[in-house]
Length: 417
Image 1: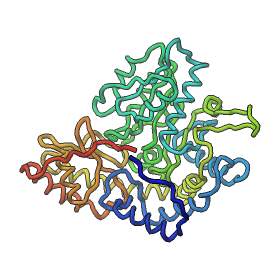
Image 2 (image 1 turned 60 degrees about the vertical axis):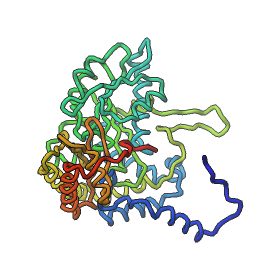
Image 3 (image 1 turned 180 degrees about the horizontal axis):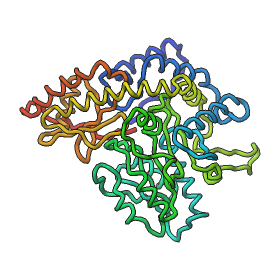
Image 4 (image 1 turned 45 degrees about the vertical axis):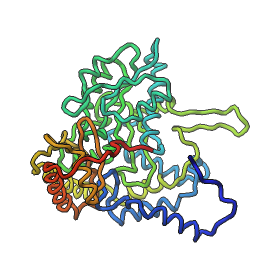
């Protein structure tokens, strides 16, 4: 039962601030060195740039970026162009800013649906084919847009089941997609193979690069074996890319990127039959703070290619040290070949969730996952000095679990809002 009521009297900011600090006291700091859940921290200097730029445009409404606030319009053009170039987009490609990865995915599906009405009409309910590991935002999009989502049942070799996806194509299929990489397992899907299916059947091909869009191009430059995943792959028509993840901008900012600017006609929503004039937006959100966009532009210009390479190289080293240490512990094993900065490990003959329980008791916060039961670690720069501490505690906890001294607590294995 909700008990809060609107306060009858005003309060001073000092009183409000005091209440908020008290409420905030038990929250784990988002960039705490023992927080191994998704958090995107790459240094205090970078955080200051992101925050200062955000605050400069906090109150500006980005819906008016083409009229009242032309600097925001220029930032959007620049950010989109930089990412299109990074992701091998052809001349004439386009993009727009959304409030997050879920919105970018929904709008990519919406664009595909409108495109299909002209280019691949169906007699029945349009269908989109997604791997087993595809983000649930695709199911949200299907529900909102009246589409059927055909999700594969397995992930052979920890990647998309290409053979099953090809077999699932039917007369009502309009779209197919892969992740670079997906949240589960962290190994990039075989985008080239999935795109070949799209080309063979005339389907819309989407790449969900919300996690990897900013990091994979730089990982490749650092010598990592990153498979082809972006607009360089023939047939890729759209991508979703989060800048508030490994772009290090403040939340929330993501991009919807299109192979051809002409496709924007299928994305935009415009309406003029009301007294206030034409209302036209590229994505779902109307009014939105200019802060996230300003933050992204500032961070990308502050770091440049050199800065991103330096940060990703350092974080790659943290990931390698953690993975090597995990693999040295008898009974633990790494899942898949993770391409970004998160990875999963499981246990062969004991309860991995008991391990998570034991590590939580020692102050380490990580995420449980399933299929198989596993622990996910998400690396950032705050972990640089904590690798050996984590591995020391992990060795001790595994020994206690094997000896029956620790059992799994009944915690949720998903994130819920």
